[in-house]
Every structure is written in C-alpha cells, then in structure tokens.
Length: 125
Image (cartoon, rainbow, N blue to C red):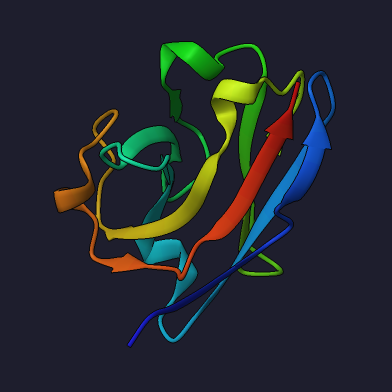
C-alpha cells in the first residue's frame, strides 16, 4: 500500500514562496508518476502539476506556469512543489497524488491511485 505524507504548507504573504514536500513509501517510487492537486473551499479539486516516473516530463496548469516547479528526488522518495510569486488565488488545500505507470499529460483526479491527506496553503493579500 502506498502512503503519501505532505508537508510544507502554511501562511504566506502575496509574492512569497513555499515549498511543499510529499514523502512516498510502500512501493517502488520509480513506478509512479506524481501529481499535485489543490482544492479551494466550495470548488472542485483541480490539477496543479505532475511529473513522470523518470522526472523527464512535467506538466502544469496555465495559472501556475512560470511560478510553480515540480521535481522529484529518487534517493529520498520525495516529490516537491516549489511555489513562487504566490497569489491569494493560490489559497487551497494541496494534495499529493501517485499514479501507477505512465504520465501522458495533465490528468484528472480520477486517474490517480493514491492520495495524501493534504496540506493547507494560505496566501494573504
């Protein structure tokens, strides 16, 4: 069974930065593509960014391109989301997710197999 534990959320002023981490355990990390999603109050969970099993391909939603960077560290079985130039609209609970197999592009939540518990990111104006 895969387990995902997110950390790094918090309160930050607009224009600031945060780095989210997601620790992966339970299965070979290299078999899973990884993604970050977020859900704001009253809204559906939305795709933020994803990275392939090898790390050679990444995808991001348009609203975070140029500001957020996803990466993975195979030695630490961890995926990161570096978030810069944060805006109040980025406020949400951020979830890490794992998908067994290939990553073909930005994906919907239903295509992911495992989820973390979420970490709150709040950006004040």
